Amino acid sequence: MAFYENTIVAKQDLAEKEIKSIIDKYNKLINDSSGKVVKIEEWGLLNLANKIKNYKKGFYIHYKFEGNKNTLEEIEKKIRVDSSIIRHLTVKYRKLDTENEFFKKDK
Image (tube, rainbow, N blue to C red):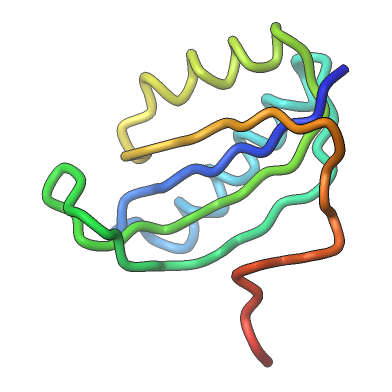
């Protein structure tokens, strides 16, 4: 199995409950399609560099997981029909960096 990072940008006007349901939905999807979620990061509401579908901000969710071709196909298929997601990006890695969290919220 290969290592992947998947970043999802959800609409800015979603409620906290809807964001949690998106996180749970894709976590379950990855685990059910022969993958394993290593880490989930909620980066929060961030400004977009350019407008996407008339949205100036987006809620970022970042998954680090192990998976195969079947896992990627399932994720792509679900994201395409999910109306609450405006963008996504999946990147393949040889080794995951689970130590650093680049958009960590300061407490």
